[in-house]
Length: 194
Image (cartoon, rainbow, N blue to C red; front, side):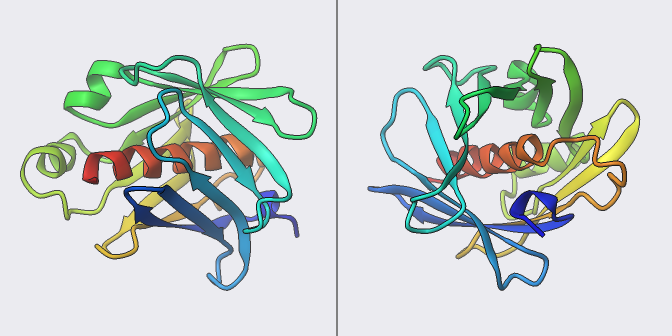
């Protein structure tokens, strides 16, 4: 089974404030590395390359910010080998900044196909303004249909997200788009904590 055919993933992040962050995405057993990301620090316009190996010799897909400004930013997801755009992720500006973290998942033609949103505005407000140790939980929906759940585990030393696409039995959501959303959530969360 290839890295993009799994239903359960664990995304583990390590913070290196001076050199950027690394994210390792593992299979359900947490023993097999599937994808690797090294996010560079101090980049004005975000570009993230997702590799299938820690040596960074086999790029799989890329995430590129359209602009420098992060407020309501749009990120394009492209296939590393062909350069073809797979889709985009657009952060809902005011909503994500002050209440619920909310993203739109767009297809290659800029049509909204899914959303990823925090579980509850009450928990979101507690996390943002009172107690940041409360783990985040996100739901990925295509219309009203739940296709994925992303849940942060509580570990202050190794931020980890458990990603579950088991409810997407028809594989309607491209895993590259789903995993790109998880990577962006971790990268943005990492900036907020640094």
